[in-house]
Amino acid sequence: MNKTLLIVHHTPSPHCHEMFEAVVSGATDPEIEGVEVVRRPALTVSPAEMLAADGYLLGSPANLGYMSGALKHLLVEYRLSTVGAA
Image (cartoon, rainbow, N blue to C red; front, side, top):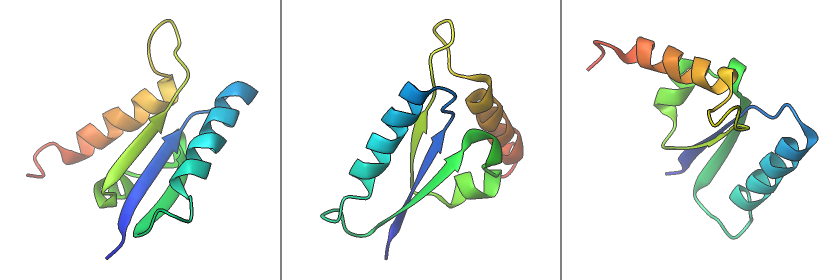
């Protein structure tokens, strides 16, 4: 059974986008078997997609030493959706 790797990114600059494409290239290497790679911009990921994934790669520029607002928004939404779910 395939595992799902969710690559979540916020790539506002060309340099960030280049790094994102390099990560995707490595994750989708033909020698890696049994992994379905799903790519999503941070503001489009649903909490259900987060819960369904087996692993995550999170990509964000560092803004004053912190992740982007788009990525933080996703993590807050995910956390709020899981409160009391256990």
